[in-house]
Picture 1 (cartoon, rainbow, N blue to C red):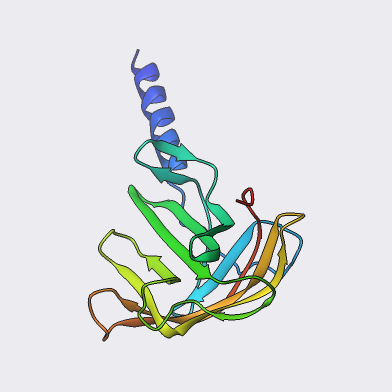
Picture 2: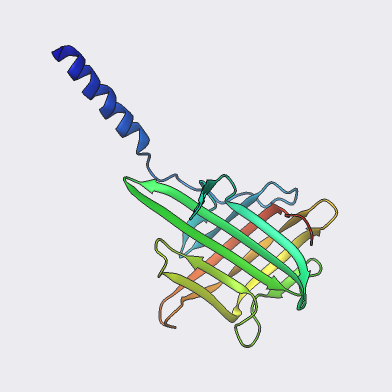
Length: 187
């Protein structure tokens, strides 16, 4: 009986240890234009890329990267959402990066926010819901290298400076951003 108790403890311990994986070592994706569903950048000099499963109030799904291109009363828009979800020991690390651009109609360089900082921009939600970095007009740009609404592909690069939402003193630089994403259905 003592043998089975020890064996049980060893098996349970092994299972618990194997479930706690270290945070992955991320690499910037290659610059491509074929709809490979890649996204990454340097935030404050550290690599950030979409990773893991997207979790929300109603559960988790495998979609951690989406791109919507459509038209509303304001005109054409592009919305890209990327999520990073991993465990660090027993702590869940959940981060979100978003790009919203208006009047994007063809390849080219676009400022992501208007003069009033109300339409478009970049945002980064760090490890908790209260650490949110936002772009300001003239500080966040997207360079569309491919916009193919027939084959549903958008590719490009992005960069800028994001400031902590409640202050202008704390900022992070977003550099070497790149994406190559299959669009959700054109609306």
